[in-house]
Image 1 (cartoon, rainbow, N blue to C red):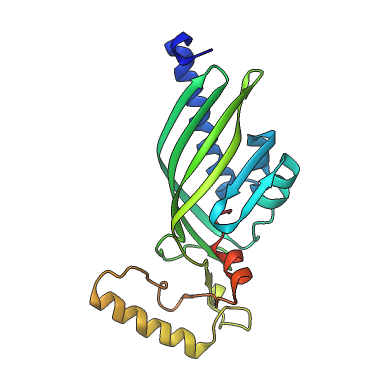
Image 2 (cartoon, rainbow, N blue to C red):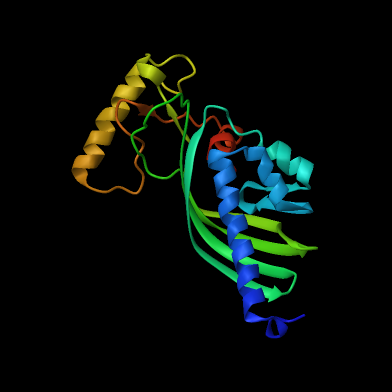
Length: 215
């Protein structure tokens, strides 16, 4: 059935159902059970990140992948510019933009803001199965991205061996950050002085672990 044959109310309901999937995906990653985003996909659903050479297919694989999010990660995603195109009574596509604010090593309380860890957009394909809409395919595209910042000393404790940088590196980072602030906006800002330090890039594997757009 073409969109011309769809009743306007049916089209609006289809658009709303797909928009809700996009928003629910973000909510589950940030505030719910990350692994449960697998339930938003069809049984043979696919999530892809072409730049990172990643492709995850099937609900169980998706559940394991998204469920691997670090327990001490704090994140909030801004999702906007959602544009759904209903192609038929059972198929639709969409694009949406997102910006991810994210830190590791979180325990509790308020964290000073930093720039987003990544900014990009999703390209989604939806399929209606019986009376329910699902994600059939999601492609994640990242024109802007960086490593995930780690809190250097949660609850006021000194940075330890796993904090991502030692005291001298952290102090140098603070000086560089202050210089960057005094010089005006910069294309990349390392983090908030005192509380944050950047993880060391230990190669492709280390970068992928903290640069990943997953969760």
